[in-house]
Amino acid sequence: MKLLHVDASILGDHSASRRLSDSIVKRLTALNPATEVIRYDLAAEPIGHLTGAELLAQRGSTPEDVATKENAARNAKALDDFLDADVVVVGAPMYNFSLPSQLKAWLDRVAVAGKTFRYTPNGVEGLAKGKRVIIASSRGNFYREGQPAAGLDHQEKYLKGFFTFLGVSDVTAIRAEGLGISPGKPQCRHGGSLGRDRKPRGLTLMQNREPAMKRVQYDRFGGPEQMYFGNYVPPPLERHQVRVKVKAVAINPLDWKLRQGAMKLIIGRTFPKGVGSDYAGTVEAVGDGVTNVKFGDDVFGTMDFKNAGAFAESIVVDSRYLTRKPPQLSFGEAACLPIPATTAWAAIIDKAQARSGSRLFINGCSGAVGTFAVQLALARGATVSGSCGKAAMPKTRAAGVDPVFNYADSSSYRSAGKFDAIFDTAGTMSVSEGLAMLNRGGVFVDINPTPGRVLRGMLSGHYKMAFATMGTEHLPEIAQFAHEGVLRPTIGLEKPFSEALTAIANAESGFRGPGRIVVAL
Image 1 (tube, rainbow, N blue to C red):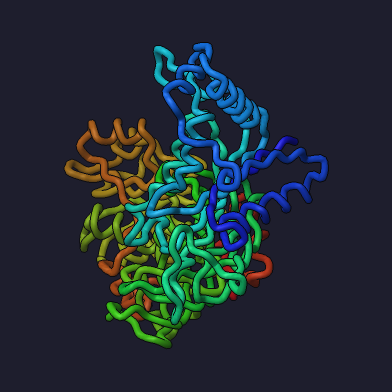
Image 2 (tube, helix red, strand yellow; image 1 turned 180 degrees about the vertical axis):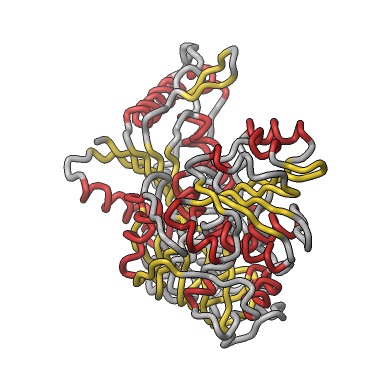
């Protein structure tokens, strides 16, 4: 394997990005001792800014003077070293929201039309395919997505866009962040010198004042084998945030869909990423703008899917996405509520508008969402019919669903009559089947939209999509319904945190049973 190691910091031994990039290279070479490493120290041996004569030489012109010939030869070697590398590790500090000019000069040498990219009738095609780029990033403040200063990040975003343009599909950023934020010490400049007594605490840690926590995370999109227990430093609290000591996490299909990359265009490619959405725990600290909970409160909630990571000892969350836990519920039971209950609320109350006298059919009425949908619909006075797996039919019937059908045989419920609303939680009912079972003015509610289903449904005028709502708009009401016994969460299986990786993999492979899988911390 050939590894190209590029450093651009001007701070020498005091540089966080240099220490970070060195650690990455050492880890990679330890895994593959036969690795050939080529290093560019752009501060010690700067390349210099691209000149017009050099640019013409890149495009095929013959240099006229000796200096230009020497520079052209050096530039050609820089390009060849980049193209030959299997892995490129770039030490990239943030200087005034952007890159060191030394690094920009090197980038200008590897972005060469006809070599690393080309223009085609169908647009630009990157030619530097099949390699991996790891950005060892350091910055003094917090600039990652979701932070107030995120819009000033012209460092990581630029580098990711640059290498993607060249055809590199595997670009990972490992960062040391918040290095200039330290009580009693001046703000660091130009990338944030750690000082000799402050060293990065690990490849995947963001440097700040909080102690490292254990969490489940992954460094690239893929299957369950990508997950591991890593160290994680929760970011400092902002005004409307809460730090929660996690006591239980309920596994949700969203957890593995995010890890598989189903929403990578939305959540981005900054790694490592945490796993887990629905949790319950105890408030450890609150920002000065938080009013709905206080220190010591037992709470439950969900994490913004862009910043998932509930499988952790401690998490920092937006105060809008949690509420107080009903006292009679265990932490595990409370963790079962957020996404399934808010999804059921959106479908049954907001979209289907269940009420006394209305008839509802719920396809998949024994699953996490379906169970809460049944409970909400019955509480609103609606009559509920539904379908589920054969093994769950007796329990579902006892819960008030009548009649209940085996959804493996769709012909059994086609003659069940007309309904005011159909709620398909399982995605096994076609839009045509659902529309055929509706009364005039009825609505087909879907939580598994695909382009074809959405198009067919929207053309009918009777199709609505329902999604979980994370804010406090419904969570306090859901907590109250659980307190009153209207919503009754069920734990199907509980595992300790040490077995979280196996538990998530088992859920992903198709765990079938009443209730949800919960991981207790």
